[in-house]
Image 1: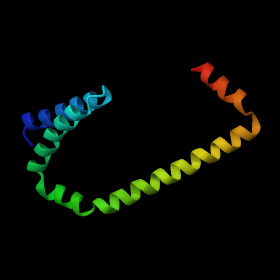
Image 2: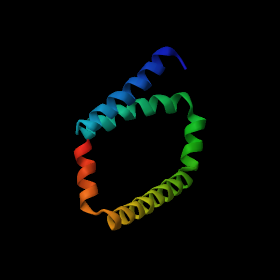
Image 3: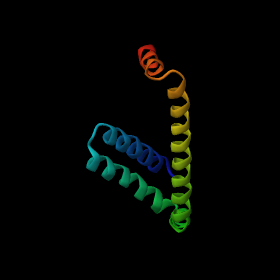
Image 4: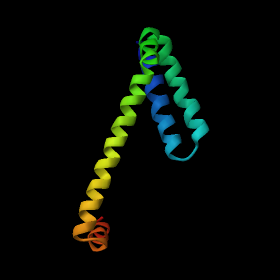
Length: 95
């Protein structure tokens, strides 16, 4: 990929992320979309592969989030049973 295309992709992704974090969702998605379109034009076979495997990626992502949620609930149950609200308040005071 040429240098200017690399700069365009990296800049648009960074700018899009910044705009999304600032609450400007529409602008962030448009700017990030420009970078994604540039990348797709450069590597169409890779994007076709991602598109074909999108269902698999979504399933794995949902499974990961499910496991993370269960782990978080388990940690919450264990810590709440031992020390309760006082531990949580002390944790917040440390930050």
